[in-house]
Figure 1 (tube, rainbow, N blue to C red):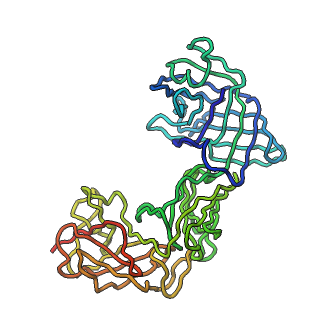
Figure 2 (cartoon, rainbow, N blue to C red):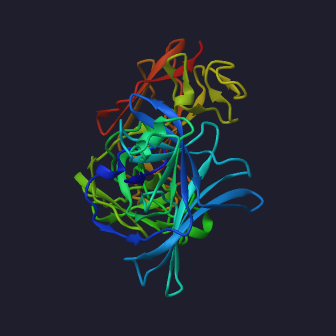
Length: 424
């Protein structure tokens, strides 16, 4: 009988690509028991509530622990697998069958709840290594079932049978290897499936960090140079170290370095849990995108994020509740932001905070099909890294209402479909 815990809300972890380097611990019979109580299901796919080991409330969270002796990492020791959730009410964790008749499960949460799963290895040498991950296997040592027919004592059948239970001690393995599932350029800036040197990108997967979440701060910088490691996570693209802005178990945000090779390049993440298999990603000279998040899609019209000097957004009046906005008019100067627009002059490498004026060699902007001839600034934004700023003065005869906003960089047209609110 086999029950597999994979990543929260993600499926099929057990059939991912081979791992390049891993930390795998093998543990024997647990000190505590695990009980699954069937909630029923359909089409052979069951669901159970989870009672996980011994629980204790620390005043903020309830932490439920299953521990056991392990070998295979360091000098061996004790592994602890902890399911944590806010408050001291009943556990919101669910065990979901991954396919009809299967005793393999994913962990999930009752809708409206939050929680996480952590695994720590207390080595016999005294070292303690913690992982925010539920990428472990567990098997029942000698299961006992209630509420189901004799000979049907298995996880899959219990999940399909309301109020049936399966309980017992468990054993298995824990694999902390990071796994990359997808890489895109920053989602608010086009979410392209390729990047350019100096582009912000988002990496999605499992076991990508050992912390709940961490965003870089001033202490992580070396002068004006951004960090290449955060919370124990590093990332390379084409063998070059990227600058890491945010890490969590399921997502990492990073800026590709200026010396990223062009063509199909491997993206690799390394954590205390090992090194991921490479994820191949196309790298182009430019992969330009302007800031245009889903929240700026109004009635099916995707507006670019543009601002006036006083912080008012360029949108129809009242388009987004609580956000001051008005359309732009002829002669108004507006500011927009982007990523992936390529090299500037003088050269400012990726990962370095911008402290001097600079400019793009070739950038053209059109509003309502009319060329914008007055562009006071087009280059990397001051006091940021990898973020481009475009100041533009709205030309005459640009139209009225939601008008197309397009651009070219280095002669190549941007691929986003964007609009700007304009009033005559």
